Every structure is written in C-alpha cells, then in structure tokens.
Image (cartoon, rainbow, N blue to C red; front, top):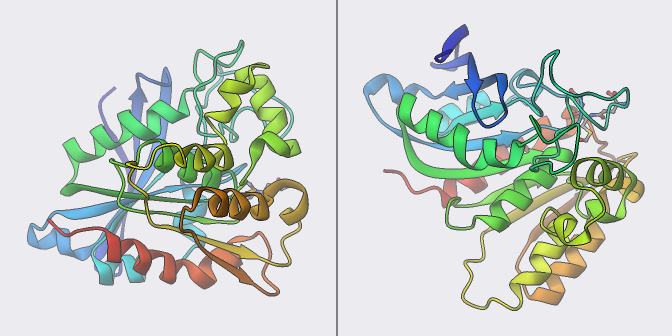
Length: 285
Ligand SMILES: N[C@@H](CCC(=O)N[C@@H](CSC=O)C(=O)NCC(=O)O)C(=O)O
C-alpha cells in the first residue's frame, strides 16, 4: 500500500492531514498525522518536529488537544504525530493499557510474541522520517518531543541519535523506566531480562554514558513537569534524570509547575514554549 490520505483540515492557514501506510519495519498498516504550516503554501520547505504521544494515545490526541497549530503556523514548523505502537488483529496485545497496542515504548522488541511488530524505535528513527522527507515539503532539520511514554521515547531517541535532531523536549517523561512499574513491565515483556538491553532505552543511563564521551554532541533538552501529576513519584521520577544530568554535566532546562497534572490541559498550557524552544534550535533551510 502506498501512502493514503484519509483526512485533510485547514488549520491556521496550514493543513492537518492524516495518512495510512504499510510500514515495512512494523510489518503492519500504520497511521500518522502531519500539520503543515501555511509557509508550505508558498513553496517553502519547513523543518519538522516529531511528537511522540503517551500510553493509550493515537496520532489524534496531540493534534486535537494540545493546541499546537497556531504557534506552529506562526513559527513555520511542521509537526508529525505517529501512532504509539503497531496495531491490528495480527499484532500481539495485552489487556493492560501499559503494554501492547497503544504502548509500544518506542523500542525494538527482542522477545516473543512482540518482536514481529514492535519495532517502534526503528520506525521513528528511520522509516517515518524517510517517508516524511520523501513526500512532504520539509527540510532535514528535525527535532523531537513527547509526553510521558512519548517523553521517554523522545529523550532516548535524541540521546542515541544526537546528529539527527536539533533539540529534544518532553512533558512529564517516564525518566527512568528501568526503575518504575510501567517501564519494568514493558521492558521485561519486550526486551527480556538482559539489563544491557534495558539500559539502551533508559534516558538516565544514556545521559550518564555521555560523561565518558566528551566529544559527543550535547543536544538542547527542555523538560516540563506538573507538581500535581498523579504519576510523578511512582512512574516519572524526574529527579533521577536531574541527578544523572548533574553527574554527567549535561545541561537540561527543567521546569516544575505548581498545580498541573498529567493531562493534555498541562501540555496545552506550555506547548507554545516548547515550540519556540524547538524553533530557536531548528535552522531554517
Ligand atoms: N488510566 C489512564 C492512563 C493512560 C494515560 O494517562 N495516558 C496518558 C499518557 S500516560 C503515559 O504515557 C495520555 O496521554 N492519555 C491520553 C489523553 O488524551 O489524555 C487511561 O486509560 O486513560
């Protein structure tokens, strides 16, 4: 199946579009959404922010709830929102919302029954950007952001591929998945019990490893966390990431916000600041 357009809505002078395509990496049909700002109407190519959503989400949660389009239009940034896992009847699943479909954790599974489809790391790092850059009027200037499980995914992907992204930001990321119930359940199922494999998908471990690589590019990182987030102390553990960053002398812009929870009401309140942060690091072509 080639790329199939399934919806198109004008928004702030630009376009919100949804597409279906057959992913060779994930071995199933996938859907993603793209917001193209009005600059593309004049033949301009624009940089791209990849947004990774959290548990239970599809491409629609961010596009419908974050309110990102107005500022993305002003700044001339395209936003791509992929789904959060492979999907379909032939794809393994679990009854828990934090494992299986809707919970791909942006990693490459090595274990059965997940390995055949759950290759979200390669999908986000390789297949999707290749498809986007071959199809839409975009430059190769990329940055990446996400929420919760998607914040974990954005941090891990950027830290492992610092030459591919200009900046990374996260709302309420699962900062230390090796040491929280959501992460331990997912990593055990998808990666088995080899802790070396777990470390490759834990942003705290990846940041610590940069201390031994002084020539590595240190990407601009911004993190925002609500103080009234019900997952803060059990699943998110941002203090572990702050400690790792301090230990490795890795600069992280970290902001805590009194009264905000884990929802898209929080994201919508600060998404403008994230978009401006990315715009300041994405070089225009
Ligand atoms: N019990 C809830 C838990 C799921 C949830 O809170 N999902 C968050 C992301 S959590 C970490 O990755 C989310 O973004 N939900 C979608 C939304 O639009 O708010 C549930 O089942 O909803």
